[in-house]
Image 1 (cartoon, rainbow, N blue to C red):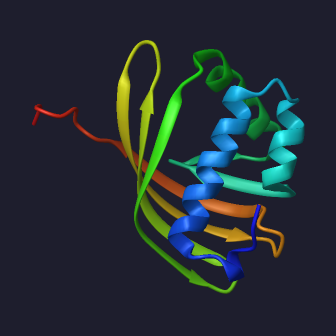
Image 2: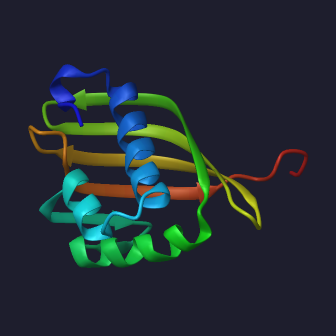
Length: 132
């Protein structure tokens, strides 16, 4: 994982989300080790009002692993200020039951080594193509 300071913000967040998802979904590596590689031990994420610390983040990966989704990130905007990153992107997810497009508004802080320290994330599922 690269440093936020030396990477284009759009590329950084796209690589972060893509790599983390790939490692969780397509490897048998311990989920805790993967979470620790991408997040600091004191990580706190607030996602749509739900607080996730390290343990809850690991637990959150279990159902994702079972569904084995494919994901693609389309970053629309990303800005940095020191260790902070703000981004708006669409996460396209496909699994055996459905295709989803999720709009993500991300506000986070990263450590110097590129691991996430804190995030506030707001999401909404976008309508399927052809539907209002």
